[in-house]
Amino acid sequence: MPPKKKKEKGSKAIGRRLAKFSHLQGKKLLDVCSREFDMVVQQQVEDFHEACGERLDVASGKLDGLEGHMASIVAHQEMRVAEAHQQQVEAVDSERQEKKILCQWLNGFLVSAGEEPNLDPIDFAFARFALNMAIAADHTPVAKMTEARVPSFLVGMLSSSNDIVLGPSAIALCHLSLHSDAKVPIVEVGAIPPIARNLRVCPSPAVLTQLAKCLASLAQNAPNKARIAGDEGMAALVELCAENSDFVDSPRCTHGVRAACLSALVNLTFQSDSNRNLLVELDGLQAIVEACMNSPDSHVIEQACRALGNIAFNSSYTAQRILQKQGSEALCSAVTACDVHADDRILEAAMIAVANLCNNETNQTHVGAGEAIKLAVHLCKHSPHPHVLRAAANCVTSLSFKSFINKTRLGEQDAIPALLHLIEKHGFGNLDKSEPFVWAVEAACRALGSLLLHGVNQFIMRDLWGLKTMVELCLTTEDMPVLHAASMSVCAMCPNAEERFDAHDEGRPLQTEQLDTIPALGRVKNFLFGRTQPPDWLTEAIRTVALDEDELRKEKTKALQRGERMDDDLKEYVIRTDLFEERGSLVLPDHAVETAPELSSLSFKAY
Image (tube, rainbow, N blue to C red; front, side, top):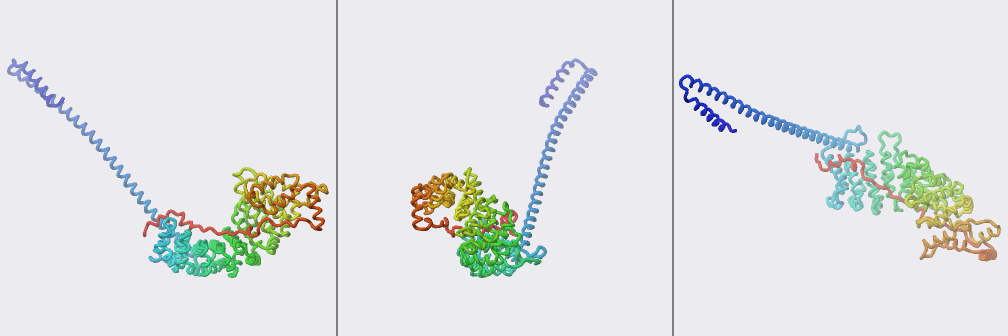
């Protein structure tokens, strides 16, 4: 009840009680009024206490809520302050780390870690600009970079004598040159002469590595090859690669520099006959052979093998010069030192190089007299990598091509069992499993066909019943290259008419008649040459195997009347130049610039 109404009600109650005592007079009336007054006062005091208590309770509740609200505000502000402090600490740490990474990256271009960097504001600005261009090369259109004359500016920076400027500018040019439409503009602004000059005088291995990588990338463009060679780029690479780094405190030509130089030479000699001859004239073979034979670095050995293979490609002159420099022995040494499971790139490159060296009978005999035959057969038998198996089998074909000496050597080194093992292991079965080895099986079949043109090897093949494997392969394979190559060995094992007649006359069984040779060769003819003329060797093999006894006797009579064997010696089934191969070298961007997020974040910061 509201206090006002409560007071009015109390007053009315008191008035009614006093009205009842109106008949009293004097002291009695005074006593009654005093008692009633005391009661009213006491009631008012109690009411006042109760109202004050209620007010105090309300005020206390409000104070408690205010205190909790203030506590939450203070806690929230403290959390914001802590978060802001942590963000500032992280920002400072990040900036400190970025500066540390930048310093470490720039110091990496110095000759030694103890050398004091020589930096002024201009050099630092150039280095930062080059870093930004190296990062932007993967994200900015080449047209925009060329329109802004970035290549010209970077080439101008190559005239600096400060390694901290040379290194980043070389990296930026290398990254930009990875784009095919930027290779020619970089050369046209005059990049080759300063690069060649710095390759001769710069003392920093890190800078030399980037300069050589830049040349390797530019050499992937055909018109640039002649420009690089003409501006003494190749000569500078040869001179640097030939430098001795043994027993030198601060060598210029470290393993990384030598690998980059060899990679550039690989790309310069790739599809360039003039550069192959120029490299020989510059006496670059000795340095490459020594790197292949003596280097402990796997990347150097791989690039040296590729360089030797490219130099020898389809050139008897350069191949002979390599053999004079003991290139065959160096390649065999590299293969011997490799792990057959881990060093597949070196093994493939070495086998390609050995195959390229065998481009005439003299070179074949020289190479076959060494360890090349043994190593090629070993790889055909034990390598788990399809590209190594293909290269090794192709090397066997190149060694044996029209060389009865090497065919005999290969037969003695168990090349035929090794090739049959490769074919049986990877030429049959699930398509998903055998598909990666298609070209290896095709090369093995082709090598086997070349080896079987030698009569002694045919005896080995008969003892192993290898013809059964090849006939089954012709009847089952769905790969056309394998089918074509497999038919070569089957045709090589097919006797001519005179040999068939002599075998029947002596009662000797022939494996070609015991197996499904005619259906196998018929499948080859129908699948591969359904609408075209089949090769003579396939047509003659099918005709000879299909002759009956009367026809064989007639053919024998004709041969006796001629006084000679009726069939000429078998010829090779492939063209020699198809056995040669050359490879370029892949150029990758700088690992630190490509993968370090701290360096990438610097491209949008200026300090």
